[in-house]
Length: 129
Image (tube, rainbow, N blue to C red; front, side, top):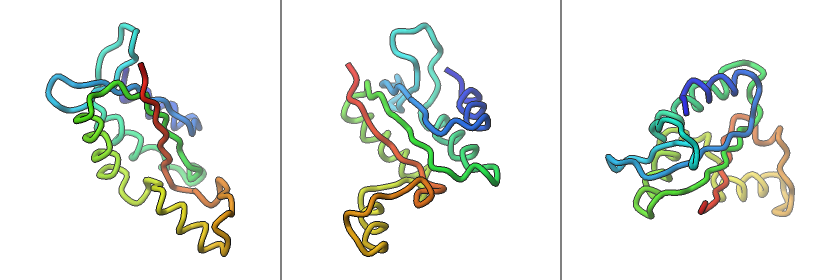
């Protein structure tokens, strides 16, 4: 695992990332590829690299989707949530944001398009095994 790898793939145009999170020995979540022999890096460093790089270019405003594979304890899962909110701030798409965006379109059933979500980070999670 490498922070620079996340930067590189974003700069190459990738808009969908998978991050495998696991408990860090110091109480801060780590990123690694579970079941593979890779080094661990800090979850916060990965998020900061994504935040700095994902929307760096003029044409890089399309939304980014992060798929989290969660292998963390409940305490470190909570820490992951805190870091997502702290690092991405208003870029992080929260459920209330989706509802607000739909209501501004005049129809709560309106589907949002990638154009509606420009500059945003969407996170989906998987409990992992």
